[in-house]
Figure 1 (cartoon, one colour):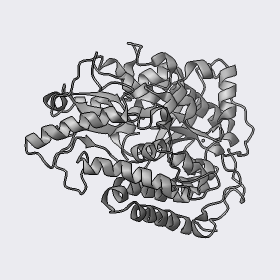
Figure 2 (spheres, helix red, strand yellow):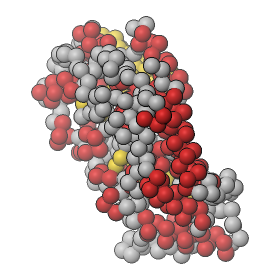
Figure 3 (tube, helix red, strand yellow):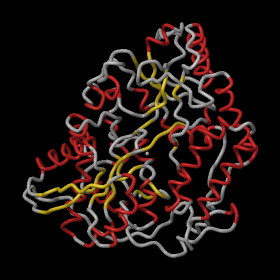
Figure 4 (cartoon, one colour):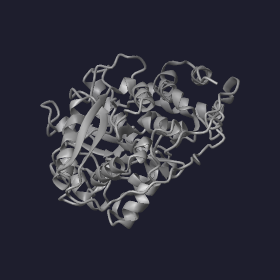
Amino acid sequence: MTKLTKIVSCILSSAFLAAAGAGCNGYNRPNSGGELPAQDYTVDFNLPATTSAEIKVIIPDNETERKLMNALIEGFNQKYPNIKVTMNFLTIDSYNSTVTKQYSAKVLADVIWTNSSNYYFLVSNGYALNLDHFTEQAEKAGEFDYDADFTEDFRSMGLFGGTRYAVPRSADSVVTFYNKNILTAAGVDLKPETTLVKNGWSWEDFLTVCGQVREYYDKKSDSKFYPIDANFTWEAVSWPVMKSLGGELIDKEGKFALTEGKNEEIYSFVQNMVTKRYIPAENDGKSSFENGTGAMLFQSTTIDHYETTATLKGKFDVVSFPKIAGENSAMGIGFAGYALNSQVAEDQAKLNAASAFMAYLMSNDGQQKAAKDGGLTLPSIRSGLSAENPDAYWHSTYPAFNVAAYTYGSEYKATQDFLAYADSSISSSLINALNSYVGSYCIKQTTSGKAYNLLKGAIQDAFDTIVS
């Protein structure tokens, strides 16, 4: 879930797509939590190696996704050389419209790229196949042992109401990147035996380090340098902040749910960082982790993203996201992965071939291929390819790094589950409102009430756009 731009099979009932109520009553969804009808289908997982078929996959049009998909297709074709896999492309900005038009015209690819936010759109519109049958039948066929072979993070992602509609290809957890040189110069103890900077560190520990860095910058007259690139305008951070402090954005009835009391806590939390000058009050920060002048960064990208740059090579490490509220903490997690077009169930040959491709992605060989040749150096969905396994390609290139930071604290990982309770057409608006609230209103507004009213207004604006 990098900051980039983060599961039925039949059309949903009109009741499920009920319109928004008046005021901030929101979007009333009778089936909140997702009890969606399923379409019956059977997959043949015992395909001969000589099987001939043609399937299509649709992915974002960028080099990262192309490289990964080319690697997966190459590995899959070693097993099934006569199944042709063709790539189609879309842009993230046009995701919803492209998928809708192609699905309506029955030309949408059989395998659909999706992520933490977009899969709610796929599910609520009936575009994604309910994968419960896929999972059950694959397990019976010996493709995998679902509970034993996959991580807890995997088993909690790509679901709607407990039903799987997407297969994550990796677990994208927000971690804290830190510049070892800057922290050392600021007097931060980085000795493994005694450091505060370790997996599971508390928010208080984090603030202590911020204070040391703030003092270091001030002594150097770097008043416009700030200790943390907090990324509060990114839902993978803004949502854990709200969630950790007990706030909710949208409840299961589809209504605005943040109370004024919780708003006050969140506002004070953010303002504390502004007052202590750990984050900028305006857009006047001159430091940046990426250019080597910033001390810390909340992000979910891969180690090689920075280790391959001249500015940061050999100068940084990672540690888990700080626990904001002890055992009640939330940490950001998301996924990118793939769903099956619900229309594929109408063509048995395509269903079998597309299912075989999904099963390959989930396999040990598929995960290793994605990491080694596809550049997918984020935690694997396979339990056996953990941070402790030196042969797991996703991290073996960087043995000196604290890769366990990515997999720390599965029990704290929180996706934007509130999106399941709102009309899919306003998902982006809700995310934008959340990000603006934590990353702007709580920073720039002079009172908590002003921040609260701006958030409430933005949510109401989103509700008002829902077409009955």
